[in-house]
Length: 120
Image (tube, rainbow, N blue to C red):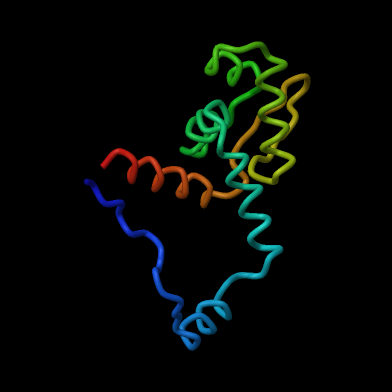
């Protein structure tokens, strides 16, 4: 007969001092909610591709992104708008073209660290 691994406590005990210490160190709920929004935005393969493509600091127009993703311009625009609305991307207009780039280099760092971790 196989036994199940124990991943829960069988007796009720906890270190109140440690729980209090950890609880006081937790970020504010509003900050955690913003992190949740960020990670939900990153939970899409197309948006991850966009962020990776922009991670070297270059700009891409909507048509470039559509070609990269092999989707219609409307689909690429939707993803770019979502990332821009979340303040992950910035854009500039040049005539009839809209160019997108990362608003903050730290997003590229987060993505790079995640991919390195997963590659190990």
